[in-house]
Length: 295
Ligand code: SAM
Image (cartoon, rainbow, N blue to C red; front, side, top):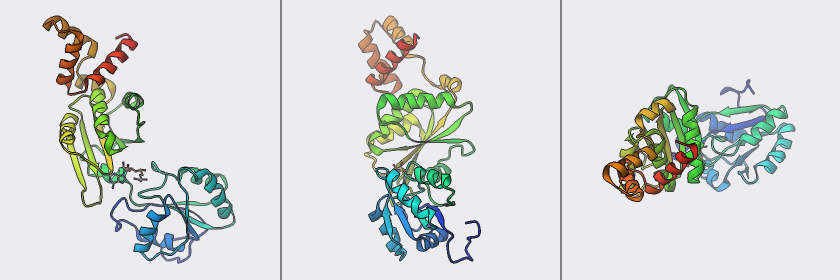
């Protein structure tokens, strides 16, 4: 495959991992178009979605569906064809295959079978979002989608925080209906002053960035009903550093409020939730975690 370059019209046999636009259909490389024209077939996450791109560029290569539910079976079938010298491209609905998208199983199987695998680089939301975020791009960690359930997501964030020895830009994909909950978790882990950037609808008409401290970005999102695709980036500090920016532990602060102002635990919780800009239920869960840890 290394012999194939722009002066060679025909493609070598093998598997081509082709990045496609994340919104704006102009974001496709000349090489990607040549590969999509030249392969024997294109394995797509959703053939209807890919057809829009192929139609725009007058590409008539046969397509076949390969998505997260049939990737294992489809991979066996495609591998058989690759072993017999086929040229196959893999694309997903948007961006780079294998990045929070199908592709990994087929790539691993192809390598195992000694089939040549070639990446055709292009758009991916993670890099597009990061480079215009204003946060540190020297050191970043991409964690894809966090678990959708609250407890598991919070644990995942705490584990990530504990794994950073130096300040690191954490990059996440997130669904719009969970963004507020996730920001609340981020505030609980890194404190309200932690800097974040939210990139929304990149390369599309309503593209925008929300940049600032997590508490400010939360306030802005609370008053706007934000939809669309989102990448969330966080200036994630190591735990010792973060602790300096995070208000003290919940149990201790509740005890202070109860003794100094004669509040009941319930009222102290309400007051602390206001102080920290988080939900009462969130503080309650944190209190239970602290008790379990014996703090
Ligand atoms: N493979 C893709 C890539 O390389 O970026 C990612 C696929 S993943 C299933 C889809 C997620 O990527 C979305 O939920 C969103 O978090 C992010 N994303 C994709 N396109 C985006 C865009 N135009 N603007 C912001 N985020 C985007």
